[in-house]
Image 1: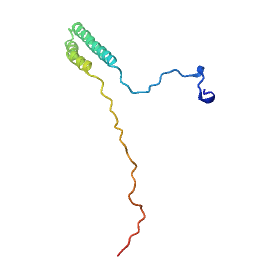
Image 2: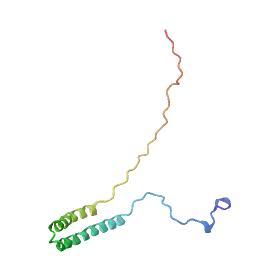
Image 3: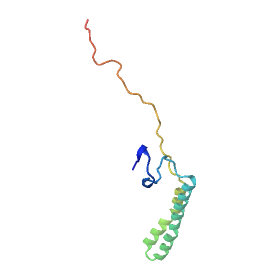
Image 4: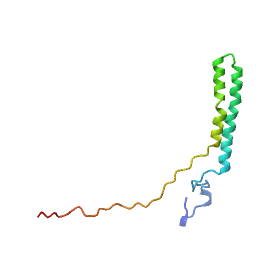
Length: 111
């Protein structure tokens, strides 16, 4: 609650941080997130190949696991090298209010 003179009392103060900018994550944070995605995707390749070996008697299932593991390195590299898209910046342009040149009531003189 606000006390006299607009002062906030200490016990009722909200200490949660407020986002005051739309700053992007740092380069290090972006790199760590991309590296984590790469490691997860490459880590999925080994289980796919192991499952293909386990299910070798069911040829279509083993072939499916092998087919799934083939594009994983390519996709992992694409995801790891892709930075987040830039935010679209709105151009601040002056827009003036449109006004009529003449008033609506005009006197017409026929000659």
